[in-house]
Length: 156
Image (tube, rainbow, N blue to C red):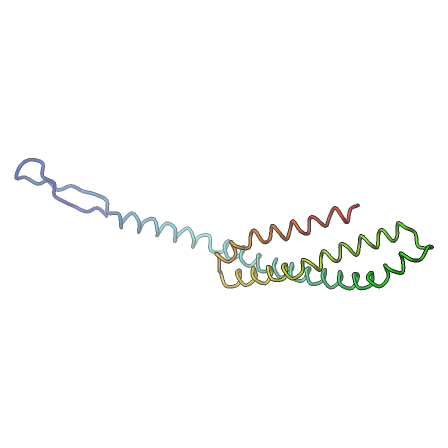
């Protein structure tokens, strides 16, 4: 909406001048943003729902991996000393068991931090706390790097 003001054009005479009000421009911009959000609401909500489902899946996979790693690690803690002292056990088998024990220990060592991150991200997604989620982007990268560092160990 335009406002009208008077501006002197010559001594003693004022001519009406039109101008655009800042508040009208901001209101129009906010209405455009609101319209855009409403048009993309389904997509935004679907992305949030997918994030929640992925977090749940990642949590279940993490729990399974840590439990499996714990079982394997406990078994190897008992067997490795015997395997190293029995001359009939091939050195390659001892080496493989040692590598597996190292990998499972790395998984267990990262467990607490990974669990906390998963829980916090899930909470952020469910409560719509965008600032909380932004803070965990870096944490996810660190977790990915920690697990990626284990992969070359597995492929040796």
